[in-house]
Image (cartoon, rainbow, N blue to C red; front, side):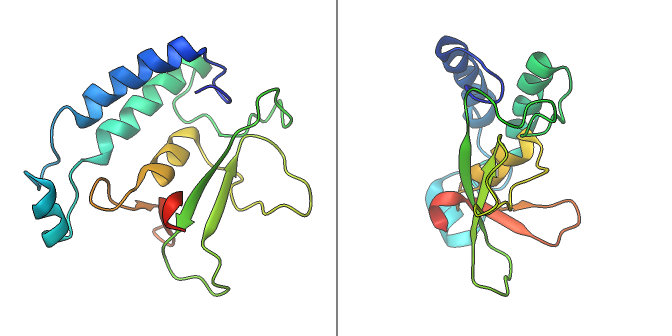
Length: 150
């Protein structure tokens, strides 16, 4: 919100509070408590309210819900953002760290995170075990989880 959407800290706090109520105000559809999520390998929260909340904020600020993480008109923004996700599906080279950024990286920096939409970045970086399911790309080939796991 601060970097790509250029929101103020106050705006971010207000939107975060709104998102928290929408996303965490009610438990997911399968689970009533965290112990059941752990034992049953399910999730506490449904990811759809998070996706919709992020898309709504993005649409309000940029005019379209599917805006890309990297602004095609500005590859070197004033406020650079780098967040991490972990690739949890099979990888051949053992590398699981995925760099998701709003700026163009140098040739020596990994560039796995190009072409992502803002809401996809939010989902890929919030998929913590027992809270949200892994984020699966549109073609189902790759799965991502919270970057702290990689």
